[in-house]
Image (cartoon, rainbow, N blue to C red; front, side, top):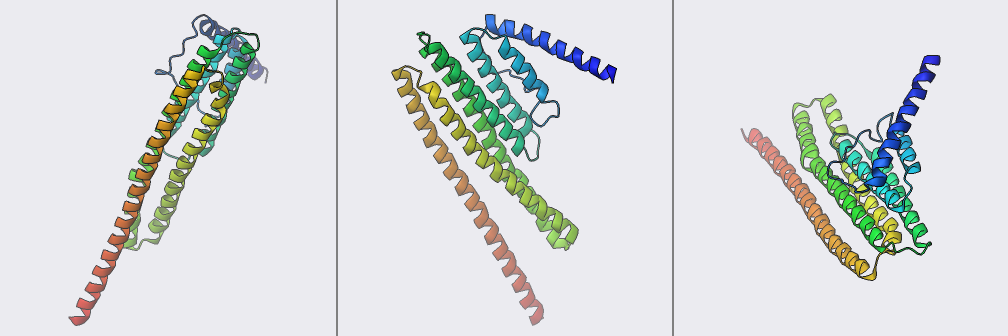
Length: 275
């Protein structure tokens, strides 16, 4: 027991030192680079709480407004990397993605609080607000793209392959394989639906929470941001309609195949009777 306690104390001290060192760098050089962000642990890991402890310590050592904002941006970028890491593996990641969304919402809220606090002191925060808003926009776009690709992968590959296995099982009249294939098909469809729903929820969360940051930007930047969002909404609508069209086409093709198979079966039965 003493060894376990000693180990935990040592780990805590190490985390504290590393966090302090990392924060010193973030304070002196606050530029956030998201292209090489490592996911590290994900919300699906039993040790994920260590990530949260480390981040809390980093927040304690971020003193300037610039450092505090950049730290929240870095945390949000890491959350997106975690989502990518989870989605790279097959399975149900609903709870993990919900944790990612909740964490990013908190990052946006903390950023807004820091900006408003600095503004209350009579300082100009419009440039920093725009930088934060643009960074969160990039993270939102990156995350939505990842979710869309994962959804497409399930629909175009997993569901198609599972349907083929179901057809083969039905052809051999193997009840065990039929049951397994049906369960896997329903699971794949549910995963696809969950991803689609979470994509919409995450987009709404980003937009709702970022309004408080957008309000702190200059009028020109606000207008530019509004136009960008309108264009993104148009593209998202077109993509959604395209997905619906693809799904409908696949369903129609499956129905036609079933009809053709049914017709062929009936024809064979009639021919057998005639013979």
